[in-house]
Amino acid sequence: MAVHVASKRQTSRFSLIPAGKLERREALWFWFFISPWVIGFLLFTAGPIIASAYLSMTKYSPGATPIWVGFNNYATLFGDRIFWKSLQVTSYYTLLAVPLGIFLSLLLAVLLNQKVPFVGIFRTLYYLPALLSGSVAVALLFSWLLNPQFGIINFLIRFFVGPQGILPVGIIGPRWLQDPNWVIPSYTMLALWGFGGGMLIYLSALQGVPTHLYEAATIDGANRFQKFFKITIPMISPVILFTFITGMIGSFQVFTPAYVIAGGTQLGAPAYSSMFYVLYLFLNAFQRYRVGLAAAQAWILFIIIMILTMLMFWASRRYVYYESDEEGSI
Amino acid sequence: MATRTGTHVAPTTSTVRSGAWASKKRQDMIIRAAATIICLLGLVVILFPLAWMISTALKTRAEVAKFPPVWIPRIPQWDNFRVALTGANPFGRYFMNTMFYAISVMVAEAVSCSFIAYGFARLRAPGKNAIFVLVLATMMLPTWVTLIPQYIMFSKIGWLDSYKPLIVPHWFGSAYLIFLLRQFYRGLPKDYEEAALIDGANYLRIWARIIIPLSLPALGAVAIMSFMFHYQDFAGPLIYINSQINYPLALGLQQFQAPFGGTRFDLLMAASVVTIIPPIIVFFIAQRYFIQGIVVSGVKG
Image 1 (cartoon, rainbow over the protein chains, first blue to last red):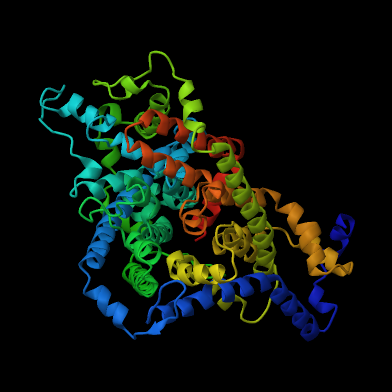
Image 2: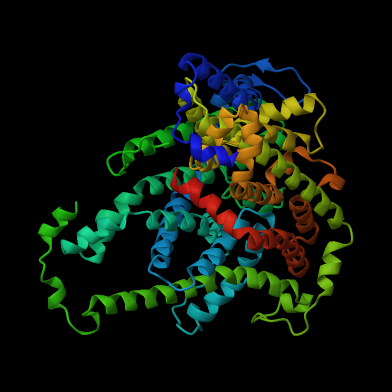
């Protein structure tokens, strides 16, 4: 096959056979190749979305027949204190974890981009926590690190900045996951531990910024900070937007650590301060069997995420710089 | 943009400064040294929890509760691993279940996503871009929206308490990996395909005989990402798997925590260490593919 390549390279295959017929054949092949996705989309995405919308208008528990109740489930949720609490908990977590995560991973990427020796090793080791941060083992590890009595973090606080510490500032370690006011910062720490994932993306984005831009700026006498804020940031702004949106979508659906740390039984403890949105959804669907209500929660989540995504695209349009690309921004 | 900043900055600024900051070369050196030190310190902070996990796993029950804490156990309690992994929790069985689940999904996703991505990357058809946008849009869809009807559907056909609901849907592709492979396929030279077409090969043959062999590195990245994710998956099995004998490690570990009520952290950490070893080994063996995959998907997003 490879032998033919050299001799036939110049031949356009469209000049050999009438265009129309070949195009039709290619289009049919296209549908053949994507047919698994189309079937999967109808069966596991589009169908369930519609079914979910229907279920959200019914009172339904497994084994029973759905009873139509219109918008009752939505009304129930809007009157439910815990629903609002779950929304508040999740928003607070998102506002804390996503921007901090982006800041830290961008900072680290910039540092690693300063011709630091052994970048490869740094990159690998920094990524390692990101690989594990969604696991049950790490959720359990953090509940141990943040243990108020025996946890190492409170020991370090006492040792360094406690009343009798090296630097006696008198800070006393909080009760972390057991104090409603510290629960979300605790989960944020767990999320930030995995910031190496974002770092990888930024690092390669930084390396993709054309060097001639920096050279031109240097000739014009720009200093480092000017170069960073006027060239680097605008050039990687699409990547920042991308990580913002995916980070937001991910943090609105955080489930595993909160479920695991609660031991699966005391979901949301203490005082509903860890009642993340999908944790409450799970509770209604699989522990209380209020499936219709949970479907309504799912739909509200869907709408929230859609609105937030569109809002972010809209709000960022003046700040994000897209290089013109033949294939558009996809 | 560059010219605009140029007008603000007097060209003499660099000559005004003096001392260690004077030359550009020395600036670079200082910045590089500072960056290296900060990165090293950060690494200590970020790897500390894992070190603490291992240290706790090797402690006696008394050492765990000691204050000030014991950094390195006096006599490593290797027996903790035996105690943690035997007893009421059949960890061997959990491990087999996990591997079965992760490998089945890995194969399903690698094959289906490669197949679908080829269509999107190489074949032209009216409406293709619109459909591809739809593929990308499904990435933004919260899994919880489709979960409840899917659960009802799978319970109606009697698939609960098996891995079928967790594996079969992956034979229909997953948006993120389709996207990743499509990016890779678009970068492959078209020459081989064109030659094969002229020789009378059809697209299916081209996919199997040309595209697959050429894209083994990218397929490796996809396979590893898929494996890692499903090896650690907790929410999926939590919803579909009921009987303990079918549990994956993630559920087994969670089960493990409850009876000890947070007191036997030595055993809990021992079991946790064991569960994270396989992904760490896979990661170090295949990290180049893995990192490549993440980078491609992120930057071209």
